[in-house]
Length: 307
Length: 101
Image 1: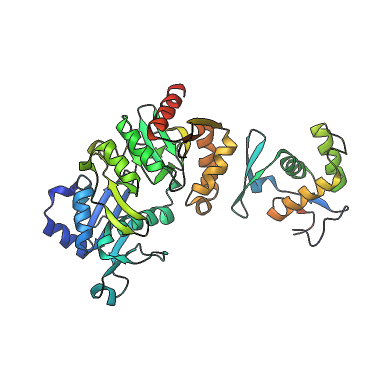
Image 2: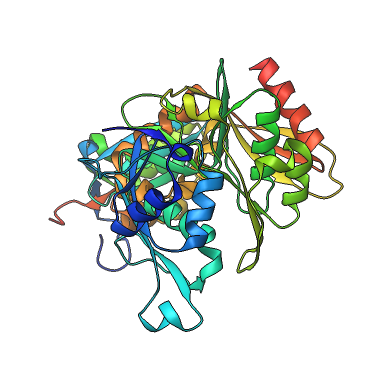
């Protein structure tokens, strides 16, 4: 196996590997075999995944198998469309070909959410410092991605913006630092925070509105194999004009919120039950209400200082 | 699961090997192995489950033992509430009428 940074390959080789289905992305605990022939997908990978480790031959074991393809022969040529095909039936809407980045990221998320059984998956942003990880579980539109990006600017390493991967036999969360998905009004906020160079081109007019991606930093990728214990569980809630407030939650309240946030709790059953019980016993949980990103950072700093 | 309404003469049982319990501040996080489902029980539901897991018991005796365990009167914890709790536990499968299998 020869892993190299994606940016070290020339475009022709990348295109060939994607077309043949031999493009393998290694990230955190997963190996992903990706295929597709869309130039928009290749552009996206060369830009947003430039620092990720890839190889051009299939691994022995590949956990994610994702094909970005036309929904049918007709749509390969007439008003071309693409859709993610993770190898099992998913409710994926075909998208115009230029939206390949969205189809790719959706396909990656569906593959991990629905097929990964080595971890308990919680839909959450996760960052960490040397003292442990902070898990931020929230519905879309609650400011999770903006808070994750802001935490990175304050010295935290990115674990994930989508999934907390909780080990089944160890009280640890594992990194999976894919790019952070930014929607609509969060794009200029994060651009202001991190600088335009770190963001992908905006894909406009998608079913989710305008979408851009904040690349993981080389230092996040370099430590993508280093798990951490969870010290804080946060349920962030952005409300325009809200006074910043942190409400402590008891373990029962935390677990009642975490079970439905897990994409594979029912699938894993008893192992997931034990993992979540251990998680809430060993971490403090809070609901955060805030009206600005600065307020959210201040709240998190206060909590990390006292826990 | 009981067929029809809960009768006063029915006795209830549960196999403690079928479930796992974790207590968090008066809320009980219960995993039921046969169904693979997770349930959140309050102290009364858990008290009933705990009791019928140790011996087969009828509605009246469950009520009496729960009132003693929690130090409350029959007005505060009437048999109707015990029956309702039994019905809910029966629906989950956590408890069952003796002789139902």
